[in-house]
Length: 69
Image (cartoon, rainbow, N blue to C red):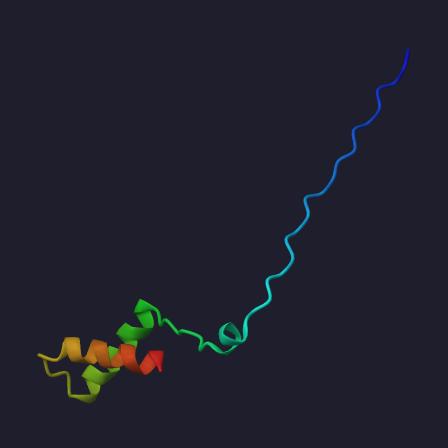
């Protein structure tokens, strides 16, 4: 009785790494702060203003700008 031959298995080939163009290599990295980071900084701004109400949105937007820069 003949023994069946084992089938050859091949590993899938990895695609070669794509080379970056000069423009892609010099693009700035976009920093996206987390919700928690923005909230903590906005709360700090609120505390610096003596916990006065009425500027929560401005504090939030300022915190987003500062963290993203």
